[in-house]
Length: 634
Image (cartoon, rainbow, N blue to C red):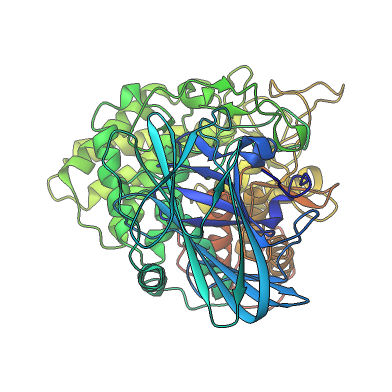
């Protein structure tokens, strides 16, 4: 099989996501699908070139070339959809390739429509499926089907059907060379099915499938309520979040594994699972934007997975609630730009992270505020989470950043324990059958947590909260203190913490690191080697906080710089490498797009008037988006 010259790894910014909310594929600017897991996000990849080489699987459709495939001249999503359009302008003509995954199909499929826009263009389709994350070479055969050729690639228990132009089967895949002329289009469809099932039918009309897919995304996007500034960025971010919301209720953190936080480093993790924290933050933001389906689905999912037995709660699960996420290394994959190990599964699933009940309780309140009807089962789960918090909040844990080192009394975890009880009180006050004695119990606990955090988690000499009790280090998760309503934004301790993080955790560009990864002697403090980039979620949190304390113009400038880090399609990875000036980490990342939306909503309520920061000046009062009325806002 003659392929183009060996392609270098693409920059993460050069990737695009298409998906059907059950799984997703990454498509490079040169027309190569280099990452695809079927049938689910957390299934083994059939195309894993992204984490290896061409030998690990890809599907390339683009103008023919004797050298390295050239990138498309222009690309875009078709309106408010996840349908990708790429165009190549060649000396002989112009061609467009439209890639999408039909939504709610009986079986997952990728459809690729090649359309001539001008002249005549020679095209190539190179198909090299490698199931099992690039480890397996399937048997590829041609089958007879009336009207069109069809290929079948099988490695049990999976079969992949390729419909479209006549492909020549080769030793390592299949190839089709064809021409496309003005006004003519041709379609390729890749379909997955279990190997033991009868032959699956192909799509009868690609145009009809395209129209239905476009209608699905446009209707969903139009149901959102946000009409403020930066609407395009907000809507694109919500579409990314929707893409990660499985119809069964689970929400993945990202569709990829092992895209590195440091190029060449070991900070490589599998994000294709449902973190309770990230899922709740996703659904909370969607609820506040008027999307009701995803919050309801997540609440039902939580009830099925957790129920009232929260004592055995994990911090993450498989999409269908699977608990065995054993972490293992794929030694046959060299990793993205040599970044090893490549991991599947996630060992953090067994960690204790005491912030999680707070995110769940905050989500339940936000969902109800967004008109999701109360549920007795949800109330029972809420009370169980409150009892869990009551029993465990004094314990050390691994914290929001999943430190692979000793447990500590992380301040963020204690603040979110307070949130768990605070939101429980708010919801139970709405229930006429709640006993005053029960409310008094939770109110005492809420005050107890609050008092301890302010006494043990605050450094009065530096006027800042610290990463953990008794420590001196800072942590960007402390930026959430005013956002969750633990203290009002005009509180001097809040302002001091924000300014300390700006001084000690900001890069030259003003973006924010999560925490110091090394101590003064240069030793790693989180159980891992190497460094990481600026964390985009934390940087958006800072913009949000700056707006809350009245420094609106500064918040706006930081927000605009962050928006400029998105790729041309509006997508963000987990981190930004300030030295290499490129995105790093799994892509696209829900936890980067969630606070983008939140900061945009905050700025939309603040206007653009510059208000000089003063430590003792409270911002003008207005209702906070937080459920807690004690917090102020810009």
